[in-house]
Length: 173
Image (tube, rainbow, N blue to C red):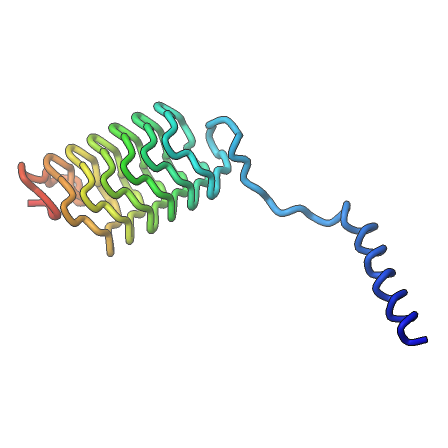
């Protein structure tokens, strides 16, 4: 008799779950096929090797996204959340990351010549061997950032007045 009651109990739970499931709130899911636009949700999407020149994803959520070997020249990430994103070996000349949250992002070997990082949160960012020639770092937070072998020649430093001298590798001279 107990076995029958347990069986009915399990079957009842399954039936109840089936009836309630269509009305349960669905978690927000990033749609990696959404076109690039402001405020897009590309969380944890993979755009490796893609050409995304000139896109404007300002204000978007791109946390944990991957742009390995992608072409994002002239792209706008203004105010975007790119924390934990991977921009390894990207072509990102002139990209605009103004006021973006890039906490823990990886720009290893990225070509960021002329990129804009004004007031960006770059704490714990990896810029290992990155090309930051002529980049604008005015007001950026660089606490814990890895600038090992990064080329900062001509970059506008975080104080907004200092230009890094020719041969500024790993630190602004």
